[in-house]
Image 1 (cartoon, rainbow, N blue to C red):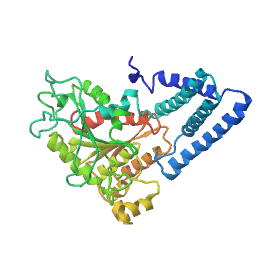
Image 2: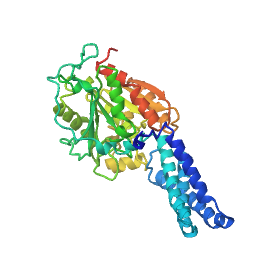
Image 3: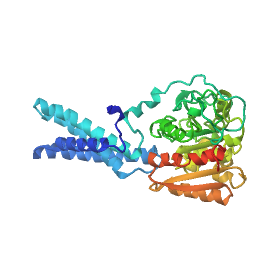
Image 4: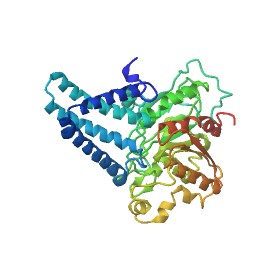
Amino acid sequence: MDPLEWDLIDGPAPAVLAALGGLALLWLVAGRRRHLVRAVVPAALIGAVGGVAVWFVTEEVLNIWGAPQPPWFYLLGGTAIAAVLLGATGLRTRRRWWQRVLTVVAPVLVLVAVAVSINAYYGSFPTLQAITNGADVPRLEAVRTPEGSGPLTTLDAWEPPADMPSTGTISVTTIPGTVSGVEAGDAYVYLPPAYLASTPAHLPVLVLIHGDPGGPEDWITGGRLPAVMDAYAAAHKGLAPIVILPDGSASTGPTPSLCLDSNYGKAGTYLSTDVPAWVKSTLKAGTHAATDWAIGGFSYGGTCSLTLATGHPSVYPTFLDISGEDEPTIEAGRDALIANYFSGDAAAFEAQNALDVVTTTPLPGTAGIITVGADDSFYRPQGEKVSAALTSAGVDVQLQTVPGGHTWEAWNAGLQNNLDWLMQRAGVLAG
């Protein structure tokens, strides 16, 4: 089997690499008492300080992850720092050539073991090949589009043409900010087999927003979106949603857009106006009714999906909030968000914030599913709060608890478990 296709999450590779990393660390630590005192103890202390420093900067100062991370995350980071220091020391003290070679190789093995262990927890890269998946995606070319703007094709009525391919395609493109003025990065498009047939099916459109930090390609790597959608299509005669993965972080400022219209650009308009307009004109999809459309996302993207569904119910009447927050946030807090994004105008923020919107705006045609990870102690309570608030406001919403923490285990389940529901909402499957 090609090493690039080794399973880095559920296969034996993480355990094997962890064992090699442990042996390499033992090699770096092993030595006489003088080595322990002069090299190992200082390296361990510096590693410990480094791990704490990484925690403080990433969580307390920059809030890069958006939520507290497991303590072992920083323990492994400190271990990696100590291994590199021990390797540098070993090159000065070890004399035999094979010892020097092992001293160079050992820190690399520790670093690899640490990286693979963290990756296995989050599920970001299922294989080494997945790391380059985004780079390998071809540009979207002209495609055969459905004729007219008739109702969506139903599973019962669909007879796949003989030339329908067995799998869909994933392509990269640019969706211009014609109305919003947003200069967004690359977007990705999944076209299912039934859309690629000689007589394309009329299919619903699912817009999926990524997390932050991150980009739309994360749905391709950690989310394995092409394989997930192909598997669904294979079980439904080639029918599956057309999936659009736009750049949900485009901003004119140093911070993410939060999918809002604000001082940092009109990201809300981009995602609610420019993206649908491009899909309708380029792919001739989503042209029949609002129920053709759904929006979803994980973490930051889950918050975006809730924001856009409540703020633009005629565009996105169906939403999938996967491990999202109870409102758009930045590390500095709500007051700083309002000051920076809205020049201190709290009402302008509340006009777009979902839990404020639902208190004043009825959403009779809107339906959503909120999924939370069973082990996600930070985001699960926020999802539960959102579910209770929307239910109290009369919105048709379901709350689901899925296995996992704030990782791809939970995010993948949030999407895969609800594809049938999305297709039923669109009318492709019988309810």
